Length: 375
Ligand SMILES: [Fe+2]
Image (cartoon, rainbow, N blue to C red):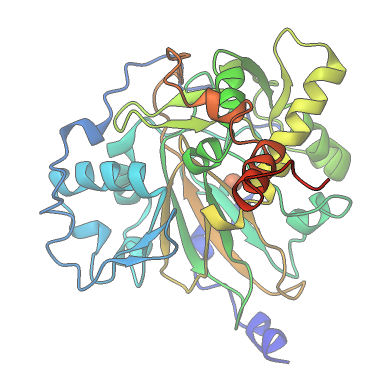
């Protein structure tokens, strides 16, 4: 088997192997002023696209691949433009990146352009590497990821660390080694489109609502799966965020509830809240026409803006195959609530004039103008 042969090889990036210390603690970043780099960007992207050989849309509503661009060669202005483009397209994909081999400090420096880096409460970092690195490692020697999803679908759209009071913005995911052949893709979904797909009057019902986000469930799973070797670096984080937020740069609205961390609609009865959240999570899960799917090779870096997207892993490759990546997670602004606008007439379209029965009656009158519809 090809995968068995690959597993015989030592990991390509031993300095980035995961380190689990049940006694370790980390401090949260704490409140900070966020000046989004997208505000400073030239919207024609002259620096970001200077070396691009193509601009490839992965789907109409989400994802752009920029062949020819090296993240490590981008100037400060180029990184500002990246912030604007990723806010608009949801995610950007860069292949064959020198970024992979820059070393911890330089990798941190580039990602920090987008905000102070988050320190994770339970995911591993490298033993001799900074706490800001989140290591994603699945192999025959380390089956923690598979164990954590053993009794749950691994397809779970989420925002990384949404319970932070200032959740992440543009986030780096760098693939060091990926399973041979296909598998282990990330699915990224556009939450601006998810919101726009709802009926106007339903959208207005959601605006103004708030929801509770908490790390309680993943922390319980960490304890359940790993017992005394569980990593619990921070206490449970719990925050209330708007259900619909506005991106600080593009001003676009986006749905901001996710099935990993959003527990309830604030102030609603449990049954009401569960009903609404189930509908919204189903709506996101079914949204194959506003998402893209990114396939990895070693050296692929994907950047997604967590304020306008959600993403899910796929755990479809053979168990025991090595998949090794790291994530750097810059924090961003306090979520900006979307305000209910004056009625622009859109809601009227939901109510009466265009419902199916009214249209049927109009059709009947057209085809049978001289008599009542033959019903
Ligand atoms: Fe994630």
